[in-house]
Image (cartoon, helix red, strand yellow):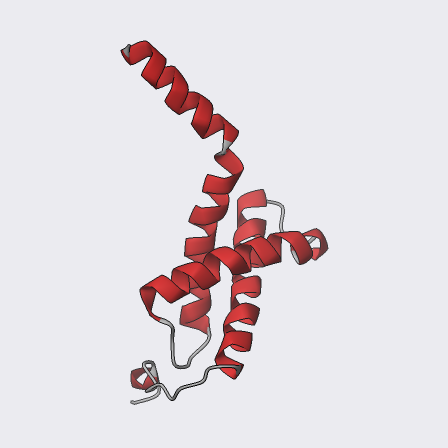
Length: 109
């Protein structure tokens, strides 16, 4: 029974490996994009969603144009960060409500 369970878990992991990598790299890219772009922020959940979707967009449209980095993981994080920054910028343009600037502390001496 235990052997079947382990086999099932390993099979699922190997089958969905790319999706798991996309989610983890998307979370990292979302946090990096939130640190780079000063502004009103989206909270931890919003940053995670923007990072994952931005990573997917970045890996589809930006990754083929990154030739100056050799490491594939760094390439994916860089493309995901750029995608998350673009998505965060677009979402920031279409915000319907006023939000207090959560990163104002960065500009104070």
